[in-house]
Image (cartoon, rainbow, N blue to C red; front, side, top):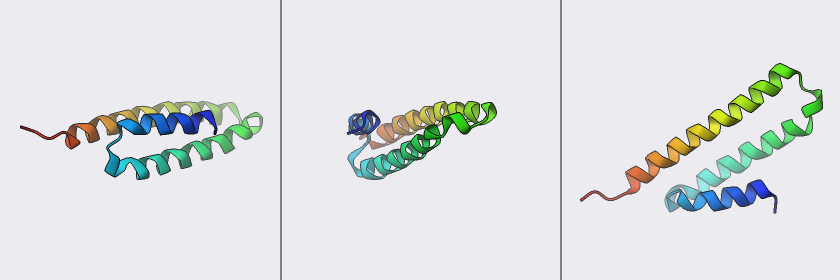
Length: 78
């Protein structure tokens, strides 16, 4: 198994169970797409490389916030 898939599996443990399958499918698809782009890294111009790196960081940040909100909403209130 590829390291990034193991990481998704591990991080998925903090995602609420009811959302986990969709979350995992979304991230696996995203990383497969980025893996294809990285395979052609030498063919990309510098602007596209920079955009790819920036969007990866932005997406990761948004996903962390999303999981935090999901966990907050999934916690029962007293």
